[in-house]
Length: 297
Image 1: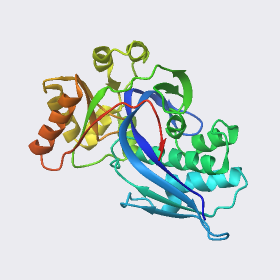
Image 2: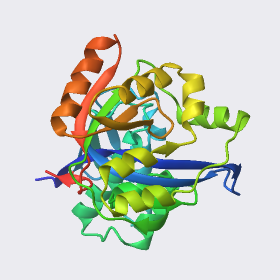
Image 3: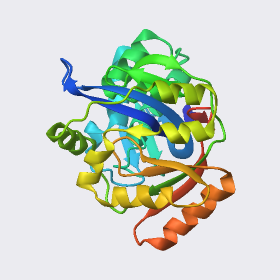
């Protein structure tokens, strides 16, 4: 019987995202990014195929990228090569994390495949080869291998500081109809770059597990680029900030999804329902921050 593994890959939020104007030798902007995982999951299933069958990838929806360029495919191919394993695996991804939202779905799925293959092979995720592959696939992928609240630097792929877990922080997610592609957001940022704030205030707030302080310190200097591309992002942020029980709101990543930190879980659920009924095309979801990363089923 073929070996297989099933896991849930979480979305992420950027509590602080500070993009620096200059690019490094790889062409990446330096990014100060403090991320947390939340309880919105894609489902990733991997199983062995007959020898010589090669890799196959199926997704529950079209994400606008050919299979051979999908981060999941790239991660599986590179990891098989690095670990000298046959590329005879089928991968199926059931999407729940909306694309072009700044929620990290593609990076989390890629990390999920890396974690799943390591589980099948008995390979330590901390192996240098594994981490190198994760970084090569995408800047956020290393975070999802061990997604505790973390401050990352470099291109958002170099761990600077691991922070205390903040499980159970109530979150409402609201995404307008249109998404934002990450390359388009960075091009818009380059047209009018903004020097970023320091992440120190957010690090202190997370370290103290203080929800009000976290909400007050929310920051994203890529948000204005997202707003120029999808003006409805600004409408969502403004609307969320006016809702009773919402402590603070901000665009996550390159957008177009916005998140609100709420006083209680029932507030998050009520705000999500209210937003869904308010504007046609708004996608909403109530969840919490999670202490675990990808969860094996």
